[in-house]
Length: 254
Image (cartoon, rainbow, N blue to C red; front, side, top):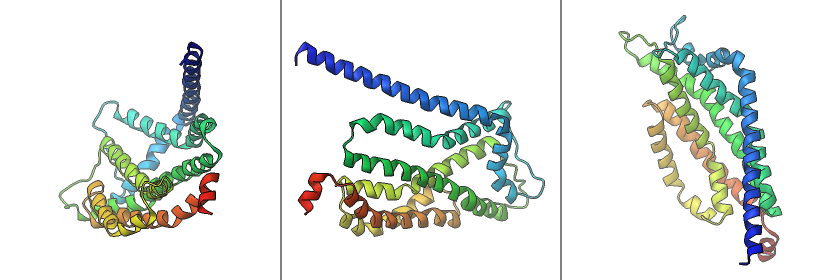
């Protein structure tokens, strides 16, 4: 490689780093702006987050804070996460704008739908957890708790629990995307995914038993959607593979 070629490669690498930095800065600024705009309502946002728990407790019950700055810190964390979710389309656009110039036309057909659908599925998993699963879990815990125990959850522990559940259900709803990518990239055939279906069902209940509280309803509410979404992935994968083929791949199939 000549000196001119080396210089050209270095300049290209540096230009990519600068572009990446600019994209990260734009995404970060959007998150910060969203966070600052939501801060006046941070207490309301946290009240919305704890509503499923409070609805399961006796009327008039409240949560407790054992840390000195916890009553301020936890609502701030929740507000920051909400701001990130709100500006997520802009963040994903910055990611898309960075990688798009280096992709072929058929690859762009692959990336764009995956980015959009994976975001919607993750948010759908979080919403499913909040509006359905939390109500079942918290009411079940309240019913089986001994009368000698006064349920006064700590807001810090509640935040950790909620984030764990949100991530678990959000990632569970990504199962169709995983199946689609595996089939499209040729890593696993569709027939193989169908053959291992029984193992996936067993694995779904094992995962649900690990990441959810030890009650049967919450485990079912995670395992059953995981199995159904796996079936959705099997149905969509062939169609997605056909619509995102490169021209050479289409000719070979014809």
